Amino acid sequence: MLKVGSVNGRGTPQGGILSPGLANFVLADLGRGRQAQYIRYADDFIVLTDDVEGELEYCKAFLRERGNILNEAKTIVGESDKGFEFGGFRFVDFRTSPRPKSIERLYLDLEERKRKWTGTEKEMKSLRGRVDG
Image (tube, rainbow, N blue to C red; front, side, top):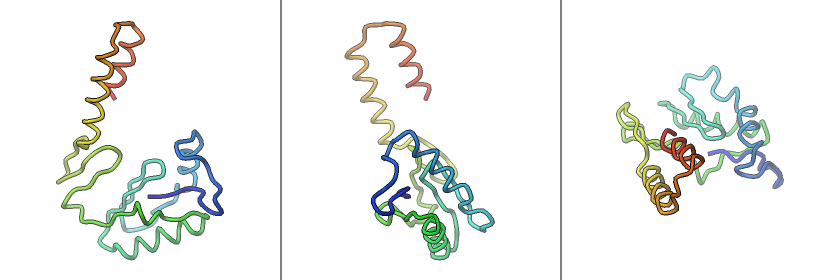
């Protein structure tokens, strides 16, 4: 939803070690004092509101003041009662479940690990970390 540091082609590389920290710094006050509910994870965020246009304009102005832009291609406006996906999860009717794509990736990863499995302690620790999340 947000492309940090996009002004004049400068900024941190996507997936870089600094990107999440900078995003938290830049977005710390996003939504503060607003009637809408803001939910953030690093540089992604969801806004739950009845005033869609007003909050969209607020977000654009907030980012513009900090030298950033709202990525229109990644901005989705929809109704929450139909459900939405965020951070690898699907939210519907106040219930949360992993996205089907996330589950598929987990199964593919486990199949690949099974194919290469040798049973070392390092593999066991890695597998525990992957399965436990």
